[in-house]
Each structure stands twice: as C-alpha cells, then as structure tokens.
Amino acid sequence: MGRAFQNRKESMAKTADAKTKVYSKYGREIYVCAKSGGTDPSGNLTLRGLIDKAKKDQVPSHVIDKALDKAKGAGGEDFSPARYEGFGPGNCMVIVECLTDNPNRTFGDVRGCFTKTKSKIGTQGSVSHMFDHCAIFAFAGEDEEAVLEALMEADVDVTDIESEEGRITVFAPHTEYAKAKQALIDTFGEIEFEADEIQFLPQTHTPLEGDDVAMFEKFIDMLNDLDDVQNVYHNAELPQNA
Image 1 (cartoon, rainbow, N blue to C red):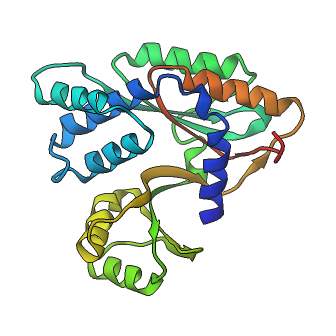
Image 2: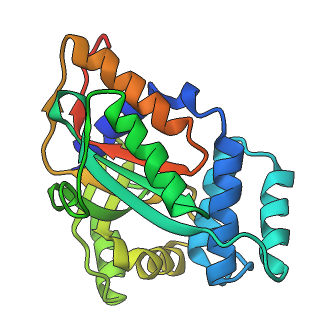
C-alpha cells in the first residue's frame, strides 16, 4: 500500500503545476471544514491537518485567515461535497472530489472533461470499490511496535503500518482519521506529519502508454483547472519518462 501511495504522489506531482487555483481550493476546503466542525483547530483535528497542509504548500496566512473569518460569520456560500467516478484515457479508473455551490454546473463541467478526452463518466460506485478510502499519516520514526500499541490502546482499527528509511506510515479506514490522529498526538506529542490526509488509494494499477499518456495528462489538467475540483484520484501508471 505504501508503494501505491508513493506512486500516486509522484504521478500527481507531474500535474502540480496545473493547479493554478491552489489558494482558492484550500480556501474553500478550509471554509467548509471550519463551518461544519468549528473554527478552532485545537478542537477540529481535520481543520488542523488541513491548515498544516496548506502551510506546507505555501498558502499565505491571509488566505487561511480569510477562510476562517468567513466561516465564523453567518450565512456565506453553501458548498456541498460531490464525487464523480469514471474511466479515463486508457481505461484507467478515476475519482473526482468536488466542493460545489451548484451541483448541476459542476457535473456538466466534470462530464465535459471526460467527454473531451474520450473518457467515460460512470455512476456512483462504478470504480470506487476498487480503491481503499484511507486515512494516512506519515512521520519520522522507527518504533513501529510503539505506534501500533498506541493505536490499539485507543481502539483504532489499523489497516497497515510501514516503517521504512526512518519514516513510519500508518494506514487506517477514513472513518478512523480523528481517532488515529488524536492517539498519535496523545502518545508522541506534537508530531511533524509528512502526510496527514484522507485519500483514495487504488488496489490495482492500469499502465498507460502511447497516445493515452498525453490524453491522460490533458484530462488531469482540465480537471485541476476547474474551481470546484478539490482532488483527483486515479490508478493510472505512467511511463517513468512521461
């Protein structure tokens, strides 16, 4: 599972430059998270992780503060999550997560990305059953047993723990995110997390080659250019020189 996580990080890094709207994406996600779970990061662990992640991605403090201030006020935009699934170029599997204030517009925009790249949008559940919906935590450390013990004492349902090159990676069901993070903080104090997020990890990979590689990159760029798209997960395996 760790290799799949690393592969996804590497493939997504190739499209990172396409995320020109990264500030607004973080601002929207922080706003929604704070609106639903509270604006105090010490009492809202999901928000805390999101802010830490935004800072690592060099999102300016004023963008974060503005989103929090907006969440404290009454009213504001009514964003709701939307998830779309389907088959991308080369028949790879794709999950697109959005935050939208207009589901009809968002569906039309996402569907357009599929149809313009000879891809096929599917129904809910058409590909997500081939992904593991995981909470992932990675941090410096080597004592795998101590980490497992801390999580088990907190009654966390751990999927997997890996220790490699001085880094420990914990995988748990997405529903265990807050409980797992709290257990790690309670046991080991303030941890500098290299990864602290909920993701869809593919159970299998689909190698792409030839024209499918360029079409796939165009497809991902088109999705990332949409304001409503927050995350794109896929099982495409690109050539090393792609």
